Amino acid sequence: MTNSSTNILDIKNIEVMYDNVILALHDVSLKVPKGKVVALLGANGAGKSTTLKSVSTMLASERGKVTKGSIDYDGNSIEKQTPSQMVGLGMVQVLEGRRCFGHLTVEENIISGAYSRKLSKGEINQELEKIYAYFLRLKERRKSQAAFTSGGEQQMIAVARAMMAKPKMLLLDEPTMGLAPQLVAEIFKIVKELNQKEGVSILLAEQNTNIALKNSDYGYIIETGKVMLEGTAESLLNDEKVKELYLGISKKGRKNFRDVLKEESLSKRIK
Amino acid sequence: MANEILFFMEVVVGGLLAGTMYSLVALGFVLIFKASATFNFSQGAMVFFSVLAFCGFMQDFNIPFVLAFILAAFLMVLVGLCTERLVLRPLMNASEDTVLMATIGLGYVLEGLAQAAWGVEVRRLDLGIGDFPVPWIADNLKLFISALDITAGLVAALMIIGLFLLFKYTKIGLGLRAVADDAGAASSIGIPLKHIMLLVWSAAGVVALVAGCMWGARAGVQFALVDLALKALPVLIIGGFSSIPGAIIGGLIIGATEKVLEVYIGPFFGGAIEGWAPYVLAIFFLLYRPEGLFGEKIIRRV
Image (cartoon, rainbow over all chains, first blue to last red; front, side, top):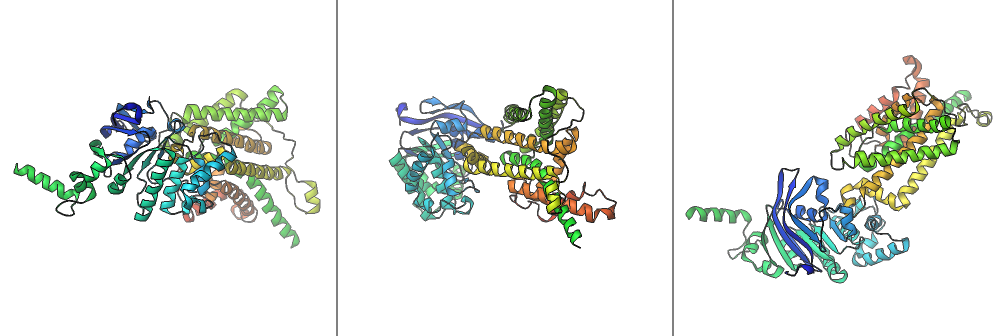
């Protein structure tokens, strides 16, 4: 994690504001080494999506702005880039909530991901077959209208669509949101495969701490716009605080966030 | 009796064909509404601007018909380009209401520019197609149907087929449909919104030119064409703001109903109900099916 040339993404102390008044990120720094999977964990409103959107430069379309700090992708600052330029450079974000094109067929959805590449019809079909090898389920449903597919299938469409852009790096925003455990496992299996076989680096925002860490190399935990904790996935999984706050496991049995807060304020009062 | 049926047929067919002229105007609105979710108040001005330029090229510069049409089409692409660059891009992150207001302003600019460049008098546009019954149809089918109406119907059909092919089978068409569904997701996979906007506004400009030619040939090329936009409103309400087939069917329904109502019910009201009957129909749609026949079930105020 130390040598900067091995990092495909290097975020240094960024601060992000929406509408010039709402401070969404205070101070976030993180690195994604080439070819690795990094998990960005935290509760709702912690700043996970904002961090990803700062990287894909999609912030501007939501009137957000990086006001401090820097983001380097593949050795260059992304400050002046637009989302479509970022896609051209091989950085693709899979937005939260899947966001498939409902009126398009599954196949049209996937093909739309290749929009930024100049491909012939034959090349597109080749790429499609390559993608379908990872998403067998989508091949069966290629002619269906995307709006009528299940949540899990829509998530696969969103990832497949992003893969058609031939990314070097994928930003996945809560890919398992609202999915059944079996599908969560299936999505992660595919993500892992894409990482290993295609060499795509992945920054993954998740609330599902346990499975996210099990499938990542490194993890960051953010709360109210700040990185609170970071470490290798293994160390985070075994960390007592993480276990208590995010995995719901503790020596005293199950516990939720509110209990911990109560205890802390109690102990403060005693002091 | 047979004569009455023939007369009814004539009214309906005439109405349907006249309706395609409304469809042509409505089509321009739909294109822009699909891509930017904005009702383009300047569409009427675009119709006026484009056809006045077309007439100007022919009559003031003696440019031949076909070349003048191509020039006018290019001019509309240029208008699309300027609109994207000077109006839409600076307002990229503004709310849809802001863009809506901007289109009203754009309308005034286009009206002013057109009149400054080509003068304010009414011009006659002769397409070489008469606005009188076609003898062959009159003799054989006993229906009196205007040649201009038939041409408008054919042109509308061609435009629809052309746009359908463009959207369904080209890369940029796929991009447009993607943007229409979810502009944010489209931009996240690298579909450049500005190219799509440029395409849509240029296409809407060319559609405006075609609609303007048809209406100009019938009613003269004059400032009143701007108000055609109002006639497209009931068409859009009935067909749905975001549907191309909707614009066509909506136009046909408006055309046929207003003619039938005018002929059969008009006399009870002292005639001339054509002017407001479509709006009454539109109000019924707003009450019972606000998304229109083919629209998506999201309606926004315009």
